Length: 342
Image 1 (tube, rainbow, N blue to C red):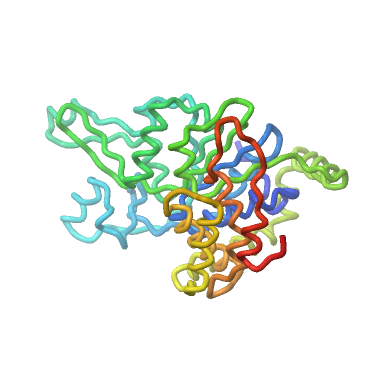
Image 2 (tube, one colour):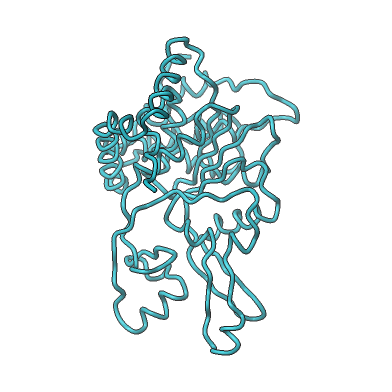
């Protein structure tokens, strides 16, 4: 059966902050992921799945379930380490993808399992890869992330912090890299997200339905056209999709060369101090997001405009708030620091 064409990313109407956040995470996977909050029917899941078509290829060890990077042997999984001792490993290009983690997933399904019978009888590690292995160097997507069970959240927190997943059973262990872009979507009406997990997200965005009548009409028109003939609809946006994909690949290559001046560093620190943000993670993330934004825009240095464009995404979920406080953040001080009028 032929697979239905995915709804094109470039066909999504509005939701510019959400689309920007997803693109920044693709351009700089080390940024730290995206949390998307919003009511049902605001294209959250559609946007994440559509982003898969924009992902570049990975240079990986051939046949490795974890897609180990041949350029980073220090991050090899246990299997690749054993194979590398025998000589140079074969390589291949594999498409980067979106790996979904269902909220009902068991611990074994997430971390993988060890075949104890093979270990005892034959003296070899037989590892059945889990979701974290498939997600290495890819996007790990969790819909309704606020409904994840606590022990699965703990696993994600450990993997995000260490970049490694280790499975241990009866004195036998297997380790593999688990470096992924975590993207979560949630409806706040269905419950909140644990503060420890919220803090791991580099970017956060709240989405809502389009308030302009013309935009809402366009959403309906495009969705009906897609459902009637997905392939024909996707073909309309093929050129835009390819252009954006090329822009992403170029931006990923440019990231390492984007310069950050002392003035930009000073403005970043001043923004965090003005807003009373705790710790230094916000400052570092703001600079990294600014680098990714500059690279995506084709610039070789971060500007105040870059910081302004990403400041809401980076800082909104890091603001100090008292319990039950829902008042909107006053961004006028940030705009003033970054050279914009309130």
